[in-house]
Image (cartoon, rainbow, N blue to C red; front, side, top):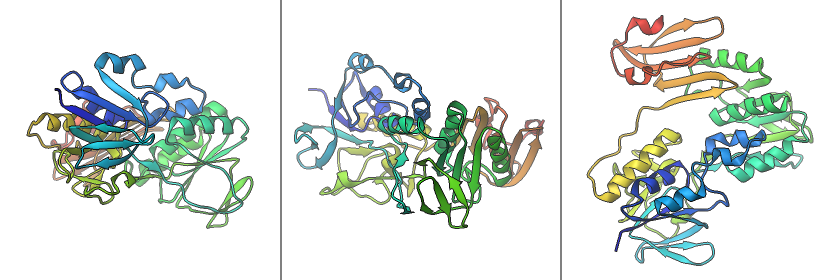
Length: 372
């Protein structure tokens, strides 16, 4: 009988693991949403009127062709000794190997004042609800200036033709991806596209049509959207011996403290670090499959990188912001290189397409032609 691998969670990590094991093992993929798996980072396309099918990873027929059993249900418990997963309808699924890829949940914090409807943007259902709300809005406000928040802000401003404000508690937007000067340029360019950045700010209270900041400033907000980070819901582990911290603790082979159980994607914690990028989710899906096969290969996360469009602006980040800065400003663009001991440690491109070769050059001797 073939090894039965059960994967809880149908995001990028879970689908990648399923695809990698399909054909050689029996694979069951548990998907708690009433849609085939989709790309979460593209939800703004649905918010602004796009066809949901355009963000599906694969059509339903693809899973059948691959021999992947795709189940619409929610896992609510794990029996380590009996090697079973309990589902919300009280049924159980037996496994030989279990992969937990449950992802993360959106942060929503309480706001004093008038009770209002707040919209997270973490699921396709969220996207539909926000889409309908925006049809009646003359403006919108997004709490959180991360990658998804900015992409959504630009999509709403561009497609709905309404002003959008973004409230960010950090001193400037994208502090993990940009230095302060690059962020300032991006904020200026976004302003030209109908998106106003309010950085170094926090919300004090809400009324019917606006948000009031701790500074006393009032921000117009017919529709309030939360894009203020994520957290891991680890309640699935209740009653198990699986070690947890901020996420599910795994070793270099992505195995948890419990035999026969792996964790990947946002929910995994490796060496005290959790991961939130699609590139790491895909890598972990591949690495977990190799580990389940019995290959003695350790997972080493790639250096973080982001290549995206924000309001039709190219924004790219590679490596880390470490060392001295070498800056090249264009008329409305900026390249920043971070060099330490003659080695290129990181690179940021704003409103300019990064060359395909730059990622491979991180960690290599810096060459002056990068700055031309």
